[in-house]
Length: 221
Image 1 (cartoon, rainbow, N blue to C red):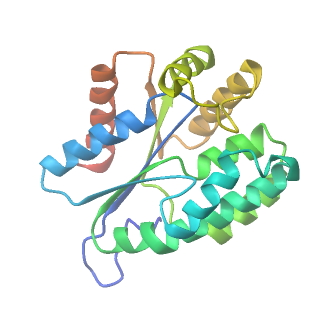
Image 2: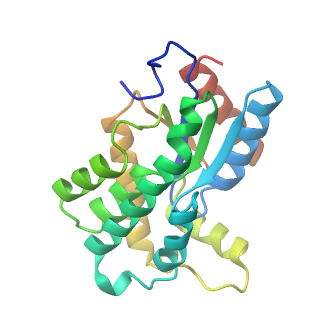
């Protein structure tokens, strides 16, 4: 049972929802739309992101996305992501959910499982140990996986980025991005009760409706 499913004092706890997927899948756009829709129902909603979301985690965000930590290897990157996540969970996610708020996060544990674990070849035992330390029982109630062919996602990411430099992960080759897509889908198959897979190749409004349907059906809105 995740921490969001029961409250020790009998009060109503919030919900923790994460968006996952490859580069350019539309996570930020759909996160914003979902948050707005929930707020219109009178719910208190916090939106956040990884890496980042809290002062300590934001301090590590530049190090991770600039590529400054890449030379240290995927295991060191996984440790830095875990350090950022631990601060994020303790400073923001856990207290917000405990107070009855909804927290919607752009990326969480599954990105580490895929980027550093499945395609980065960090041993599963290390990934699991870091997750246990940084997250504990603070697991998502629902993970919305926006699935999109890697080539289309990279095209969208490039259009969004404009003349800015690609970040640490966007710059990787197409084959690696497609392997990450496969990794996310494998995780979704392994945890069908937590994941909802959304076809992100559809129009933005169609994707938003699919997201809303999944949230309503899975979380009882």
